[in-house]
Length: 471
Image 1 (cartoon, one colour):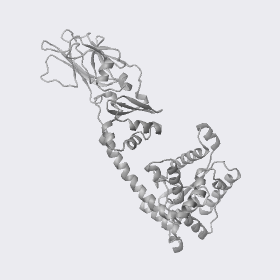
Image 2 (cartoon, one colour):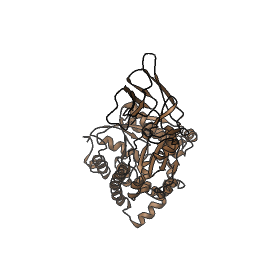
Image 3 (cartoon, one colour):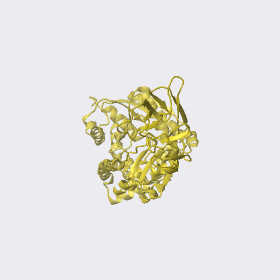
């Protein structure tokens, strides 16, 4: 705490609320450097002065969005004069908000938000200060809750604005606006007023000026009560997220085949047994931009036997053979890849687009067989100087026929065998097949053909082994 702060300020409700929120939520270390997002309004002004009074090393960032004509320029000048007086370093960023919104096909409000948070991170790196403080207060949080409530939000939306997220902190989130104005009045500090805050055609302003006053008629202590509500909701969200995480891990399945290497897979039955199917789907696909209504419909049919899928720009969600697979779009429909290798020695390793492999040639029949290895009869082939064995590994094998191990003259399309191995349609072209002499030897990790299969009369064996990174 700064030695210059008077007892009257130290015990003011604003400073008490600010100190308590910082301490309870571990937002800042003592005297830590922090950047304040400074608009010139009462909220950010009080935050800047309050943090400086408490002994934190403050810098400020002001974004001029050029959305309010002379008002925008007035706010910029105000912030410059204020920081000069308080001897606080200030950076001003000029933002072409209209162009940014048009190019991104987003609203002006969203454009300003993105520009502001981008500027925060750039300035943070420039001056090597990690923490960035914004001046959202308790009433802002209540407005956010009501807005999310009207949109049918889940638990995370109802808990409102987070007190911290990554390097963004909100030390005023438990502070009532009346304490902000009382604090500035005590200091005889002027502040800027944004005239657009009175425009009730903006949803947040409508809530502020129309909805909240009605609720305050029901409960004059609405803001004070909402502080307790947000505390309860934050704890509820922690418990909710832990429970969802446990359900997801319980439903997660291990797929033994390499085509699933970068795929998240889950048991449909275990997801349904959790009795929170939709919440689990939301959590699994949180960053995948699936349509909400589609996910809701998908959740109702989680146990249907028929295959089904949903697509977004980045992912595809597949229900197939009782399992749910979340697959990146770049893993689907991979182009044809053919890798050829010549075996010229009695043992070695090699890398391919399909993983690393090792092989050895032996005259000894194994006493036991490893299911992951492929045993090839090469009794009629010599591997001497100048001779070699040609192998080929490729994907896109669906229409190829294979004589499966243990059957006589029983040919099956590889596409059928992949289906029998419960490989989703979207991944079947990714499965590699090993060829020798242009005949399929094995669907790697799955089915062995009858071609060159060893028997008791075999004199020489090629043992082909996919490496652990493939398996």
